[in-house]
Image (cartoon, rainbow, N blue to C red; front, side):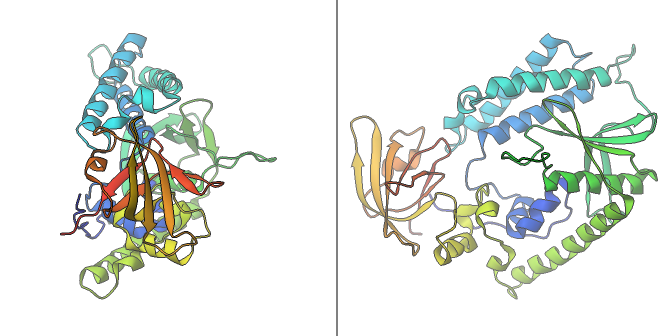
Length: 382
């Protein structure tokens, strides 16, 4: 497999949902905005999140009648089948099919998504003419808002008019709280808070009205209210516009050769652990080699110096590490040896240059084993 050069281009618009991600790592978001295909397979949970969003969108458009259970179940099944068909044509994703097998709590997520879809469908119930019932102007689902210059914009999941004023709601398929056990109150993810506050500022620009309440709505449980003030919202929007302007100048400098591509990256364990462009990011591998004592993703890059194919359908290999670390070699055990799970492994041999991403480290033995996210890339010479 030869990695094609990733395309870089200015970012025309940033949505509130991507603004925090862009601040964390401009290079990743610039590659995404330019339309590059990810170099690593997205998580099956992320794919299911897309299915859930599409289900809620269909409910909001009144396509699920009044939330009849059989209608919702059929729509869910249809969306999952379409998602799995897309995944099945990808050599690095087909092993994730079916989603019901690759996501341990798939059934819990399905039940919660269908229940929430029923609630949304009841809100958007159609009238006798067969059209979705409309509320007051600038309310409903999927309401588009943007800044005056169009550089910051996106769709608000749901806008409702209550007795005390306008409420903005944002649906989330995952947890809206930070993970971990705390003695005090749970803390809402900062990115989600900023996203909703930006939407509040954009809604005010479009409609001339400030929302009285912002809500994060998880699939399960009650909505979480996000406190904000108008001054904070205006400041955040001003910062987002200024950041995008500066980001595009930095991208332009790279494109004309005045700045190195690596200066757009912000490699760190937190920024890189879920990044699907790690194989093409030199800044990531440079940062790993300079500081290997922090918990980087369990990835291995180097040359195969030993390789054993076992009778149980597994492969074990020893890789001479390319980056400078405390270990000169990495042992990878129990890789699945078949063309569906790891198609490139069939042509690997001693001396092959190889990248292996998404492994599970064994801190006692200092070796690695396969996970459901493990991906192999062979580095052939051009």
